[in-house]
Length: 165
Image (cartoon, rainbow, N blue to C red):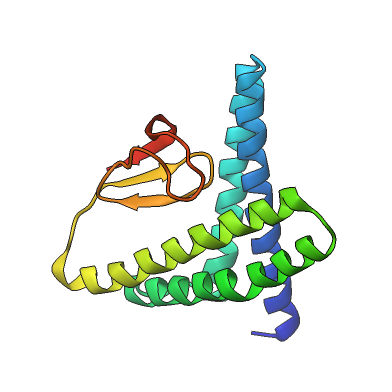
């Protein structure tokens, strides 16, 4: 594949992924403000944007086996947690941006949990382990197999966790 096409496809994937997330956030806001039809529109278009991003990944041939995808995801989480967020944290502290520093700290800590979950899942492929996950809706922390009374990252109560069977 020509390098310019590869770059364009990466831009498509990145842009569509950002749009999908942004629209999901907009849908939640529309629901909170009492606009269910607008929320539905945002969710529908978000889903469409996810399809566009997935198609770009397929053309890029960046979807491997589940084991390859787990290994790639593990490496990505480790890189984000240790490289990117440490740089962001340093910048936030230098500029006195406490809110950003708080966000970067929580995100880094949660990314480390994600990396551990991917590493564990790589081992679980062989044993076909089935688990339940609970995700903190406040910071994104993921609990594996149990619902904590309180989020260890942000302190949110257990009612703020989303259950995934």
